[in-house]
Length: 353
Image (cartoon, rainbow, N blue to C red):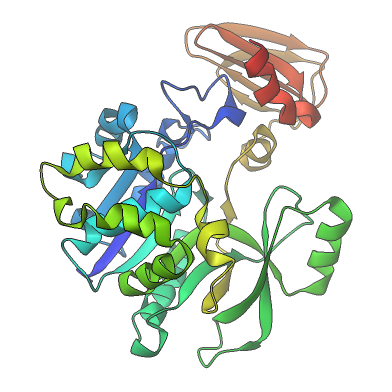
């Protein structure tokens, strides 16, 4: 078990959850669902039965290091890796890989975003253990495994994985035929009817030798940059090296940079109550509703209002009347009122502000 590591990616700002999520306090540190725990805290606790606390690494922006340590006091400061700038997931994961390489070259690794929802944690942990046991087998040393989610609806907000129809000997792990972009509604309906398509959760499992081989094959320029400081990782010189070389890394996701090219990619179809809670609409789906199907957080009185999200900061009060399928959010002296169907425009509105 001590060779198992977890990389938590926690550098995003979650701008789609404005005004709750802002640069100074992004989504992963919020308790948007009212569970009493932030997303990053829930993520950490979800993996603790699988990975020991000393084998977690959180990759984040330097501005959020103290926030990470406040939410995850079990971690030591050196377990929080600070990116000098956002360069997407491939450089983020490469950084964590090289840190692990300095202490455990034969590690098996699970990589996860910091801000997802899982409702069946027992099943989740079983699936993660199954995946780690798979990549720990000598015959699957180079396997790159993605957790796929069995779709429950024709969702247009997720990427998809097409699994190969034939099972491997475990009966649960499938080869991946293709990764698909977020589809339009007609395509999503076709995927659902087909039965061999899964939502791409963005959770990955692999051995360290396997993912390093893939980086060398598909992202050699990035590997060359990191190799220049290979013996500086886990030393006082590490941060200065990262600060200098990280901006030179290609801004590319692990999906585009590695997974789409790999010839040894696999998936586990899973069903453990997953959502990336990436939008106010997905928050509405998972929140508690009153008799009028409203999701209310904070001190608010609603009259003649239906199917609406109302999120009011503590210390403020609101009266909301006559709305149907709207979003009303007040935080840090910022107010958002819009139709839930138009929330895709939030980023554009923030730019205008």
